[in-house]
Image (tube, rainbow, N blue to C red):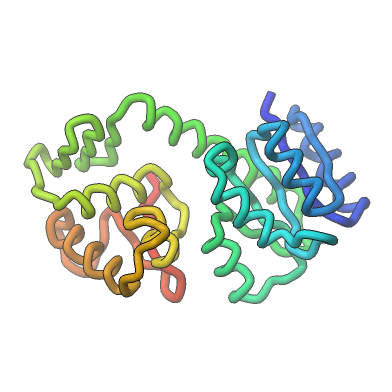
Length: 231
C-alpha cells in the first residue's frame, strides 16, 4: 500500500490526517518537526509527503528545498498543508518543488482526493519514464530517439527545446517557475536571464501549436511560470 509521511507540529492535525488516510488504505508515518520529517523522508522512502510550512526547527520550505536537491528524495511528491494562504507563500512553495498546496482549515475529503490524484500522476510519470515515449493527443515525444512529432510530422527542436518540452511533459499539470526550469534544464550554475525560458517556450509553441494564442500543450500560469496541460 502507498506510504504517506505527514509532517505537522499540531498533533490534532496529524491525527486527523492519519485517520482519514488510513481509512482509505494508506500506510501513514508521522513527524512533528522539520528535522525529524527530513530524516524519515530519507530513511523511509515514502510515496508522498504532506508537509506543513510552519514547523519547529527546520521549517517546511527548507525541508522541501532540501528534499528536492537530494537525488534520493527528489522524485517524492510533496503536498504542502499550511495556514499561510497568501499567494506569495503558494508560489514560493511551488518554486521550491512542492507539487500541490492546501491551506488550513481544509477538507479531509479534498486532501484525500489530491493525494490520490498526485499518486495516480506519479504512476503515469513512472510509466512514461519506463516506456521512453510520451504521447499526448497528436504529440509524440520519443525520448530514446530524441524525436518530437505532431500529426506524424517530425518537428525540429533544438536540444534545449527538446529537454524543456520533455521535462514539462513528464510532469503534466504541475506548475514550474522560470527559475526552477532554468535550474533543471540549464543547470544550477546557469547565470542567464529567466527570459531565456520564455524565449524557448515561444519557439516550442511556434513549432508545435496549430493555433497561435491557444496553447494545446504548454500553458502559461500568470505570475508563476508554465505547466504542461493534463489529459
